[in-house]
Figure 1 (cartoon, rainbow, N blue to C red):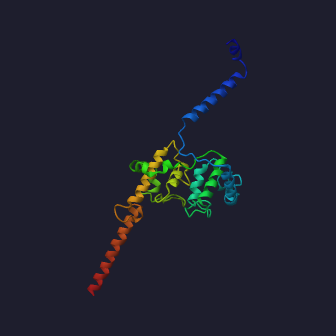
Figure 2: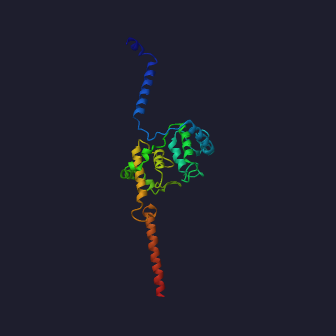
Figure 3: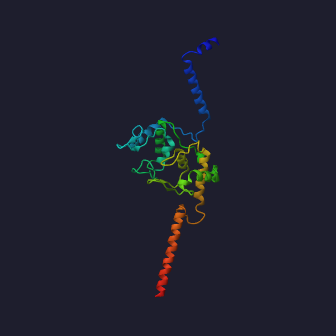
Length: 266
């Protein structure tokens, strides 16, 4: 005890105490942080194959080390991919948004240019560059385990202002848009919420738990199954298109009646 008391005033004592406090804080954070919804494991062969694919298809815009590139005027040619995680790659490449066809305000969805194995390898390489959201586990993609009613509530609160309550999408500013979110793979819906692609905010596990995301998937699949209970959906874009259709039909009928009455009067 006397030896410990004598060392309390040692110049290194404060540093040792600080290091112990940091180790304890990190351990507690790791123990109590939300559990990830995935358990994807990649091999070194996956990473090496993914790096080759990256250099051949992505490095032109994102840099050879995925550090990102900028134009001469300071605008971003391709953002850094360090820390975006495997989920972002799986979403962007799996939906055909990447590799991007041409520069523009937003990458459109198109047929995927890489198969599932290539997409997985590319995701493995990007995941090796830094920690980030991973491809979700199948448990959280099974809509039969979700609550569609609760998912609808979550969707209307967090998503409907951009994607429309029926998931039909909508216009944003400066040529951007919120795409249609029906008829998609459950995996890509989950990954979009987890990574926040394009103009979408990020809904990580702190905002929406894996179970919440599964409920949203269940709601979107319910929309696909039920369809439009009111008849023709007219694009599900709301009263503007409905009014346009109504006025077009009504005015056409009135015009036809006027022409017919005019012809009869002669």
